[in-house]
Each structure stands twice: as C-alpha cells, then as structure tokens.
Image (cartoon, rainbow, N blue to C red; front, side, top):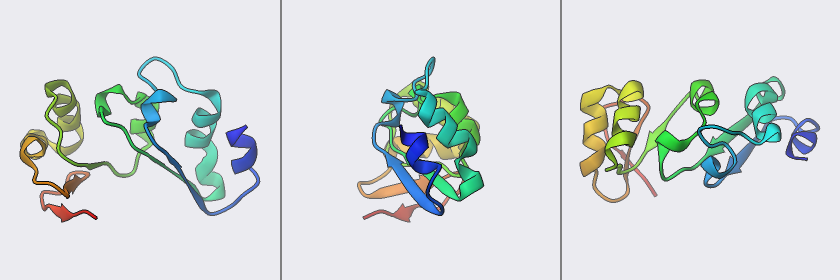
Length: 113
C-alpha cells in the first residue's frame, strides 16, 4: 500500500516514527523495503526515528546517507553507532545535553529544536 502511493509521487519525504516496528533486525515490511531500495529513483526520501538504533534493520542503515543521534546510553547501541561515527564520537552521545545531537560522523554538536 505505501509503495503504491509513493510510486505515484515525486520529490517527497516519507517520515516513519519508530521505524524499527516496521523494519526490525530480522524483518522488514515489504512496502518499506521497496521504498528504501527504490524510492530514490523518484526523489522520495525516507526519514525514520528509533529509540534503539541497533534494532533497526541493517538494510535501512546501510542505505542511509545520514544518521542523526541525540543522547544514547545503551552500550549495544553505542557500539553499533561507533561503526558509523567512530568510537570517540559515539561515546560522546552518552553525555549529550538536552536538545543537542550529532549528525553522522561530525564532531560538532548541533542545536536541535
């Protein structure tokens, strides 16, 4: 259903809250998989939120251009994020102040909303 809708629009952003509910470690809803793999051909971007980045399907994280993280304290999540950002940057996530985030491998804090 979602892919049917997205296949008919161009240049849009689809936002999925708690994306790990639909794209967990061992399973992904087929429509979301199609959107992630083929949406770019129609300039469709996918934005997902998750409280536990280590629980998001690897197909999604592998296709991601950017990763934005607020405070993360779970050791397994920090270990996973270290693969993206490097160990030093990932360790900084545990002590981020409110409304701050780190984007991809950047070392500078960014102000959130």
